[in-house]
Amino acid sequence: MDTATPIADARTAPQSEDLVAVLTAAVDAARAAVVEFSGETVGEYLGVTYEDTSAATHRFLADVPGYGGWQWAVVVAAHPGSDHATISEVVLVPGPTALLAPQWVPWDQRIKPGDLGPGDLLAPPADDPRLVPGYTLSGDPAVDDVATEVGFGRRRVLSEWGRADAAQRWHDGDHGPESAMARATRRACRDCGYLLPLAGSLGTMFGVCANEFAADGQVVDFTYGCGAHSDTPAPAGAGSPLYEPYDDGVLDVADNPQREELVAELDEAAAVSEIVEDADGAASISAPETPAGEDSPPESLEQPSPPVSAEEGSAPTEG
Image (cartoon, rainbow, N blue to C red; front, side):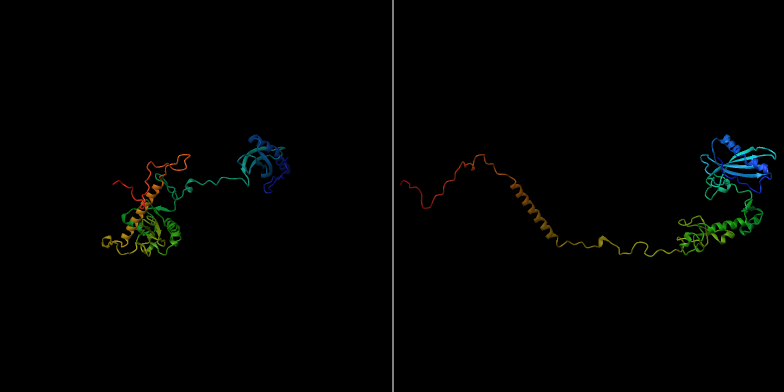
């Protein structure tokens, strides 16, 4: 059941009370029109506003996937004296909390520096204020004098405004005095040997850097600077330390006086090591085993003769 209170705009509300009642009472007809147009996607009733003396717009919260915060707007109309309103239009419109796509920007306004690639064509705008006809004096003597001398100039030349605009852009850019590189050094490009000044009036403020290790080929402000200035001194202690030359050929080679004693000690240690190894080898040879049940080793086949006592003398012999 609709409980929202209709919202009336006093400035555009119909003057006839009967017509106001007819337009306001068309809530059900407006809801039915949305259902017929988009199915069951009608949400809460939000109110009514009056477009003019014979038309009003009923709004409903839209229940459409992907359209959170959007509203159904149904425009109804009635002629003075009518007893009912007719449906004029059913549209889906964004509400205050609707998620909208970013505002569309024409392609020629979306181009940024660096977008132009090989083979791309980019025509200047028809009313580009940076360009003026070649027969118009630009205010730059380097351009105007050449055009006068030759008798004709380029079809278009840079206008005074275009020149000032470029100068301001270069001054405020990455090679201007406020860049991080420039603030990190006290030297300026105006007195650098690698600077090639521009011709004409721009040559009083800008030049092209010719140092391949710095802003090579870039237009730099005279007050720009970097660490590769032509007058940058070499840091202290740079290069290889200075020492006397080292030549093996002039050295005297002498024997170590302790060499012979060391060799003798090594030889003695080697001999002792061999003796120890021989002793260990002899000890590893085991004695013959005693037969089982015998308490003493077997008698030798040859018994030694008892010694002859000196007192016994020799056996008597026959004379």
